[in-house]
Amino acid sequence: MSPEKPIVYIISAPSGSGKSTLVNELLKLVPNLDFSISYTTRDPRGSEQNGKEYYFISREEFEQMIQADEFLEHATVFGKSYYGTARRFLREAEQNGHDLLLDIDVQGAAQIKQKCPDAVSIFVLPPDRQTLEWRLNHRSEDDKATIQRRLSAASREIENYDKYDYIIINGELKESIEQLTAIVRFARVRKTLLAEDRRVMDLADQCRLTRVGKRLRPILDSFRNLPPPAQP
Ligand code: ADP
Ligand code: 5GP
Image (cartoon, rainbow, N blue to C red; front, side, top):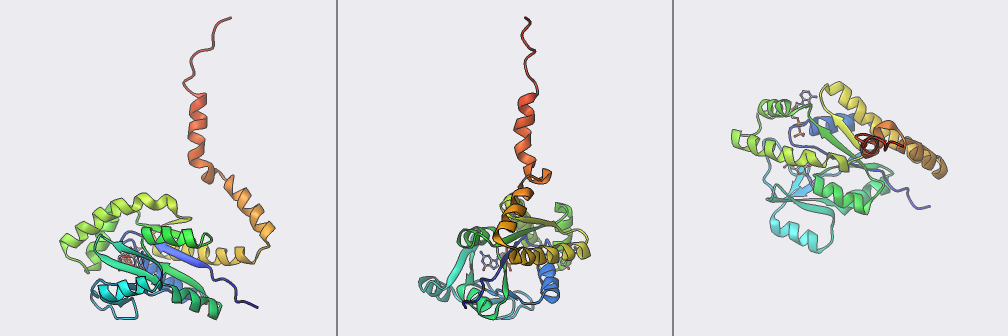
């Protein structure tokens, strides 16, 4: 029997939102979930180690991997460095009967969603800009100019929130960890359902008020501001 396809989870967030903190906690709490270690051409920061946070490689090596079709997705992030997810992580997760977690940017998330439409995507937001700035400052990892760059990148990145399946507003850390764990566990439960049960569940879910949201506005507007009815 061929091994079951892993569930692929994608998590994206503007830098400083707390994504790494959440991912580290998630990996401690959920069994059989592998983290895909990306390849990048950027230099290691602080205490980062090759093979732990990233595989740090040269541009030439990265381009050779592109040529050899070794990436599931890759992108140039912040207009500067290459980042990519190696196909082998997905293969290994499948062989081990594990699921796979990708910490990638919005460009990578879009590529994965095209190739793996069932991937579960999660976008993490800070409660507001001021909190993001405070977290970036208190993380003490970047200089002032880098923090300003990250903040302006964040303003652009958050505009992509509606391309994701789930949003976590990372205010209270404990609550966010519980939400993230619930999203991961829910996808596993959903996978165990029969196809017909999944279809019924999804159809009902599409009609939820929170889902219908934006589509209601033009309908309601069409009933408002009508000219007075013509007198007989
Ligand atoms: P990212 O991986 O998104 O760049 P980090 O996980 O490095 O962000 O978090 C940025 C900073 O914010 C870190 O100092 C982290 O300890 C802190 N942090 C993360 N989540 C929360 C939270 N919910 N409340 C307060 N501080 C947080
Ligand atoms: P950082 O350099 O701060 O670690 O990461 C910068 C951005 O690159 C983050 O948004 C992170 O999610 C993203 N990133 C990390 N690995 C990958 C990857 O393999 N592919 C893509 N597309 N983005 C990645």
